[in-house]
Length: 258
Image 1 (tube, rainbow, N blue to C red):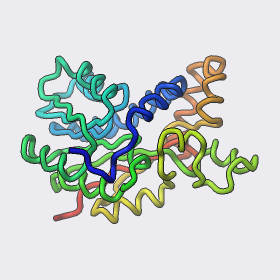
Image 2 (image 1 turned 30 degrees about the horizontal axis):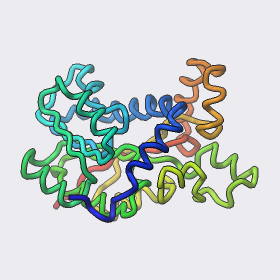
Image 3 (image 1 turned 180 degrees about the horizontal axis):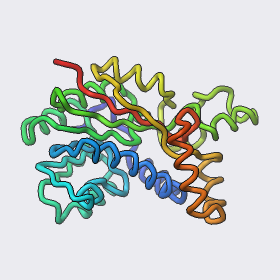
Image 4 (image 1 turned 90 degrees about the vertical axis):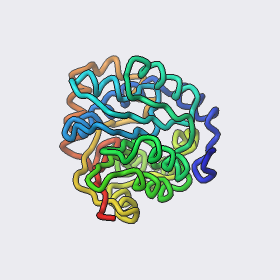
């Protein structure tokens, strides 16, 4: 069953995401590096991945020499859920739940797999209608010593600051055309992301930035080949060094004592 607060036009989302995937494939790579760094620092054995996009994390995690007891992917988009099934077909312990994540799915995970050591919520929180409901449902599947990794676009990113300086948006939290096309409800700053995590009973313990991006996805797609890998790697370093200007931000948070 779907949780109504998180329902979206998932077919339209699939189509919109695929139509703008050119530079997103680059963004995915650097986003994945940040998530994997958090995973490898903790080496969890029971993982819940909420929203996997076109490139699920498990094969990359296993390639680093780690093992799992269970890895549950929750993904409502049929195209992405199928990508997860294909990626995990040879990975014992991987389960794909094709549904929206919420209390009902959390209860199913608890009943079938127990509490998680780590939850990954990558590129999703800003897209759901009820982010607090999602965070509370995440808290339900976390063991007391578990960690959740959440990453979202950064409201104060360099390219949004540039758009404001050009008069294209009125303030840094104005939704862009791409935000609207991808059915995104808000743009988070680090402060507002930490606030929501804390309100859900989660304690931030680490934060950082992912990839400095001077221009929009569409603009970056036209110049990415000319930039080359060395410049992209440099922009990744700058994103880590200057998270306040990075294109995306992340927070790792632990579960407060129940």
